[in-house]
Length: 288
Ligand code: B12
Image (cartoon, rainbow, N blue to C red; front, side, top):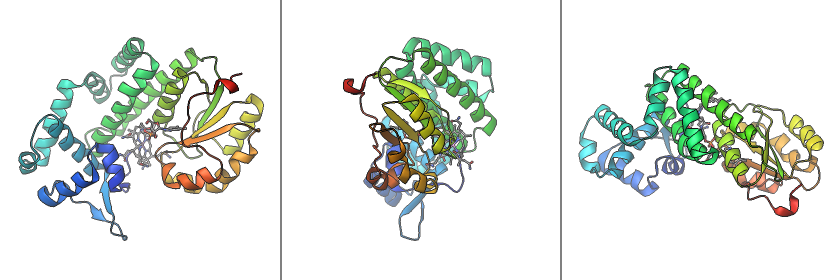
């Protein structure tokens, strides 16, 4: 789930931490909070564990601490305090503890409780997405074994799929799938949860699906839109020849949408080939 080779540019880090690029540069210059390597083109290349550390700093600064004081502390002390602060305040901490303890029964019970109380859309936005970030951070910092992440994925993905299927909706049909080679489902399923609450009728085909299969399903099911998800820009590059031919091969009038963090670097090319980058609200005119 985390790739030690994977690096992030400063705009991505700004998005992931909520710290502006200017602030990231200032913290590096004045306090040496993290010192990213430089790519051949001179751009900063942050590792996943540096991003996790910056998130810990950001959390404590948002809680009123001063960056100058924090920078003087050891990194382990900052991480421990950020984690404790998150644990005290966060409604997620019981879930994280269940993940850490490999306690599947408890995790399932907590997930089903949150889903029941919050409804699918809020559950996706307020539990699933922050939990993904927290689990990703813990893993990057070597504080969570892969088996714990797998347990979390099993439970969260199962809950999202079940809830989407339980209330299928009656609006225009939205077919969805992850690109060939894609294994991440949390982001797409959370997006589908939001789409469903806006009136789409969602049909999730699964992830890592050949694009020909998606086209074939579209001809059979005649959706109003098809949504593809890609977490990694390299995956988009690899699939680019098939993506470039994708939209004209769909039945006429079907809106093709591609999203996920991997889609944006190739955004202009994808737009040029007929993709939309936002799902949008279902137009009543295309309701079935
Ligand atoms: C769980 C997990 C896994 C699980 C996934 C299981 C499952 N069934 O989903 C497994 C173990 C399979 C996995 C594998 C890997 N993972 Co992983 N994984 C995660 C983790 C912890 C959470 C899952 C996740 O999907 N998160 C991302 C979601 C929440 O965000 P998102 O996809 O961007 O989606 C948002 C938007 O983009 C949008 N969106 C998404 N799709 C779509 C589609 C449309 C149409 C629209 C409109 C919007 C939209 O909706 C979401 C809400 O805003 C994250 C950590 C984290 N911080 O999130 C890492 C993470 C995603 N993984 C990562 C990596 C590097 C990998 C591996 C390459 C590791 C490896 N060396 O093998 C492999 C790749 C496998 C593959 N081929 O896809 C990196 C990705 C870095 C990047 N590319 O930017 C992350 C961020 C961890 C990190 N910090 O390095 N992983």
